Image (tube, rainbow, N blue to C red; front, side):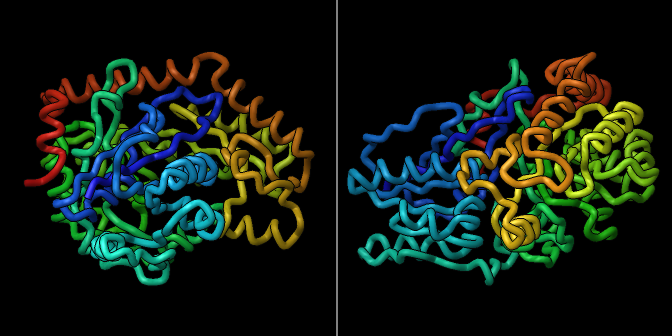
Length: 419
């Protein structure tokens, strides 16, 4: 069967330096497709979609809410030609009913051990309108090494520097953060993959630089220690979301190659100040992720927060506007309160105000959002700061004698999938 897997484009935040990482959802899904099928991939950010292609099935992988309307357009165009279309991914799960209007089928939940049945149903002319496994996660032991061989690796670079590969060492999250939908998508239970399987997957990736995309690594101290100790011999440069605020864990992370952390900065407390400094003490750069528009935020609060950010000297900062995505606590609260002003999903970019803030007007919140970006990057642009960090990790790799494992596109295609 000829299958085209498509990742729709979406609008980037205007203040960010635009670059494109190899997407994670599609390559993880691709590992669930039996090898006898001819699977090919298009990332619409980087190449056009061939709407006239002769294929037996189109799979559309959606991650973001603001990506979904474009995905629906793509689905409609293929279905107009009579090509069967199935949707999956986070965006599909968040907008299942609306997505179903543009699909022959929607797949909800984790595909491991399950997608072969979808293909069998299609070949029999019996594909179901909905495959719903949201309440029945796949055993985490069944997660296979992602199919990175489907990527056109030469397209994923920033000014000639190869972008990081995305890997996940766990699923689920025991936290229940206000703006986050992981409780709905992956459940409140932390589900770590077997560490030897994570190591084997990373060993198969001929790229020095990796991004562990787990929602938070700070879920279980012993697991974190075991993971970082197992990764240390691989000599990779690792980006991740928060790591446990513990000296033993931070030291193990640094030895394993952790050099860059995304850390939510949600207030101006000494806790946050010390957290940032402790990362730095272990040689780990910090990009603060700053959410604007919480109910306690007014103009003065945001200005005080900016003073704090400049004082602690974050390496980078990413500002977003609180966006009440479906199936989050923020959406549930604001929907009940009648504070959501639009459900035009193209505006759910985290750069526009789609609700009524508690202590300022929507217009003022957007003004403060742009002010925050401009103020933080007044002396040095986002691109300049990011470039400096890239040079820093390259110097570190050179000092440690780490050779670039990515030798050519052909090498990547050959080793991107385990034998």
